[in-house]
Length: 500
Ligand code: NAI
Ligand code: MG
View 1 (cartoon, protein in one colour):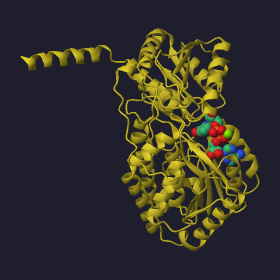
View 2 (cartoon, rainbow, N blue to C red; view 1 turned 60 degrees about the vertical axis):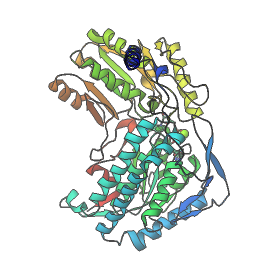
View 3 (cartoon, helix red, strand yellow; view 1 turned 180 degrees about the horizontal axis):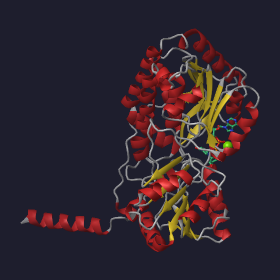
View 4 (cartoon, rainbow, N blue to C red; view 1 turned 90 degrees about the vertical axis):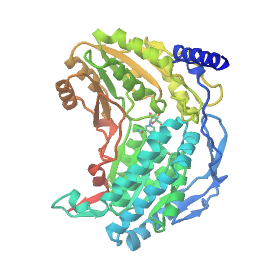
């Protein structure tokens, strides 16, 4: 009898759970433990295979954007330190790495990939602590993709002549690489793996708000036995980045970040003979046609803009919905947004984590005000957000128009601007009406529409009936103000080679 009652109780509890599904507050917190995380109090610079104190003795704090706790102190590299790193990279290039048989180089890159896999959990937790992204993403997206990039490019190391038949590929020398805070470990992998596979040595600088996984990667590189100086990791802010860009003994600069800094870098290296790739901002259009599978499309739109708090250069920040389904799509979208969980990045239930920095949160909040002042209608779910840390509710702007700043400018936050359209020609024109050209998404049941749009949308990547899917074998990059050059795939080898 007692058992039966228990069962009844259980049934009603699960009924209740089903009825209330979608109300974030009903989930029991499921935080990932941090007990296994080993962080040093203070990190030095990783130069020539060892940890070196910064010459000026300056350090800065790496702060968790969700708890506001200082996680570690990180060294700030000055121009002298960057010079040391470049000298170490040059020496390693001429004396060791460029002379090593390609298959041997490949073995080191494979080893780095395997250690990333072994230490995946630790890396994922640190990524979420330091950068604010939900653990589900760092665990399922960032870290596995980072390992896969090393695996993929390790495979190319001794096959470069097959990648470019009839050509002789040669390494460039020393690559200076500057990365942003939205995918800290993954961007390091995107940059380091192809550079090494092509026989170059590296000086890499992570973003100042997210140095920790790059420093963990330095530990992994140390553990892999990679010869000293082949990869050097220097931490610091814009001035450290500028010291890399302006160093005379660097052969190639690879940068991912803001269009503003991309332009400064382009000017700085003009006429120096340094090779350059830039991966800059975006303002991607996601386009839903009347014949699309709407539930699937709504899920993709949500993933496209709220994934990683919208800190994604290819985030689907503009939504175009065909008129006939606009009402339905907006209702489904607002329903889905009401079920998103905003909060602790380390909680496995969290959908939207912390905004990376107070500065970025301020920028997003300013755009929310701008959108309202421009006359768009704002929608935010009633969910609660933590009072401590940098958090922003997922936000929708209805009745946005082409001239609005929220439609034209990159916000880099969980903010979606919606417009409607009637015809294919109209939506192509509207979607292309931006200075950017990084990515786009098309949702339709018709293959012919997909092919028509993919050839007419000015975007480096066009996803069809999916969004934000990455694979090491697929090249990624944009044009116009989104930058130039490709990362990933066979194309991703080109920026690190001379072909003759
Ligand atoms: P940022 O472009 O200033 O920072 C990116 C990297 O460049 C960091 O490592 C930074 O230390 C370095 N850097 C800064 N100034 C430099 C200089 N003069 N020379 C060399 N390196 C320099 O981006 P920030 O200020 O963090 O974010 C501003 C906006 O940029 C964001 O709101 C977003 O719109 C956009 N952004 C785009 C990214 C993308 O993936 N395309 C990534 C990060 C930001
Ligand atoms: Mg900046």
